Each structure stands twice: as C-alpha cells, then as structure tokens.
Length: 100
Image (cartoon, rainbow, N blue to C red):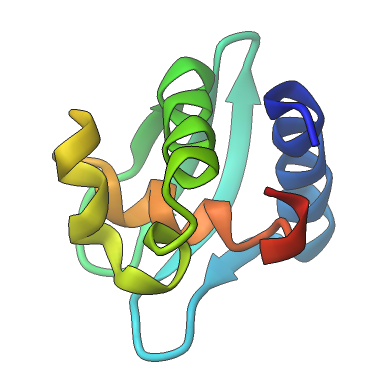
C-alpha cells in the first residue's frame, strides 16, 4: 500500500478511536490536528505535535523493515526518528501489518 494511503488509514482510525495504545506501552490520545500534524496527548508528559512528514518517514521505515512494526519504538531511531518515536510507533499500529 502507498505511504499516503497508510497515513489516511492511520488518520481515520485515530479520529474514530480517539486514542492509540499498543499493549504494554503508553497510551496517546487524539486532541486534534493542523494541516500538517496531529496533536496528541501523552500519558506521561506534555501534549505533542506529530508532523505528518515524520509519520510518513515512520511508514517508509516499516515498509523498508517490517520488523520495526513489532520491534518497539526504539527501532525507529535508526531512521532518524527520535523524541517522538514512541507516539509514531504507536500510530503505525493503527494500520494492519499487512498494509505495509
């Protein structure tokens, strides 16, 4: 599936669910969005802006290495995604593994 189509799936699911949480990891709530980013609440911190461009980088990383999907948020660091790797990794789970 194309990266933009996966992004649309993630966007649709996040809005419908109101949050995202991977079992065993922190929960992130949907606050809203701007034309270029999601705004999410962190269970253990400040509200955070997640740029769509960074989320697309995460999608492309999973397309490059499917093991990232199950490997934990730290796996995104190898692709230059830091500081917001946990919420991005969680958001990636709003699409099915087979979508990548």
